[in-house]
Image 1 (cartoon, rainbow, N blue to C red):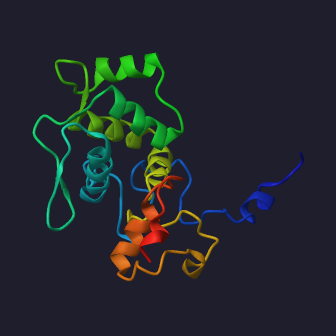
Image 2: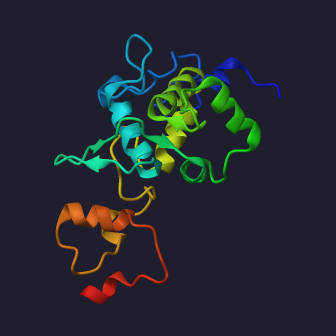
Length: 195
């Protein structure tokens, strides 16, 4: 390929809002979005921690209590047991962690005496991942339904207008509509029967 540098500078990035990897990791979102994964000191941002708290709450033991504002209250000593860790890995990456990865978590992250990943360890995973490969953290967040403004979205299908998303007539409240669209499909559950 005999292309000049001029040819490369004319090519538009398919994702202009995401700078090239030589940017500081964790701070690649446009400032206009107002959301960064890491703060100025390189720690997990408040916005990212809020998302991670919701994700951890889906898989941890004991089950968290939801506050009136909808924020999960992670119980002292909460952890991801083997089933929770596998469920989180499958939801995030499409498959459970192999034994080598599980051993690395036990060796390097905060765990319980029984070897289960704690909330602190969960945050450590994302701290390290975001510092070294921010885009992987964005992929994880997307897999759990978050967009680049760290808002939970009803659909990752950005090519469909919201009007194409069908919900039963009984779902009138907008917040219920969002919750309904996030319910995993179960063939044995007929939610339309209530209408």
